[in-house]
Image (tube, rainbow, N blue to C red):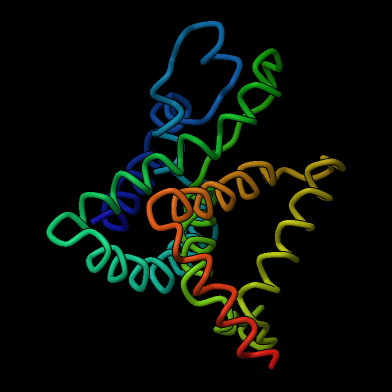
Length: 200
């Protein structure tokens, strides 16, 4: 459902530039004009087909697995919790960007990357030793990928030389870990046990 909505809204926004502009994450407009809906709508639009494809590709493979886990952890409410988790991830991932860029009228961002990062990191909490394949070739355990991804996001955010909102990726991932920690703390015990078993 989330994928279908994201595709539909992205396709419509590409046809209507005014819609795309009105839904983009603009910290300045949120701050000056109280256009708070942008916190959520920005997670359902994308810059182009490639941007949309790679976000939804990652979301499908990690999200399907995580949705199944939520159905076990929250019997009868797993689907609802999953949707709330995803929407909160979009919001939380953009909050640091908002506070940093709220007086910058030139800054804009869009895409579901922050929420997708939350889904990936939440999934890694349950399966830390499963391999994640970079570029479909290099497979590395999830917990190592999470560490490298965090380091990369921090480094690139500090440089600020490209047009990618690395801050949203970072805080989206951290939100995924925090959500699992608060809703099922015992996951950390299993997380460590799986890593120790792999190393042992």
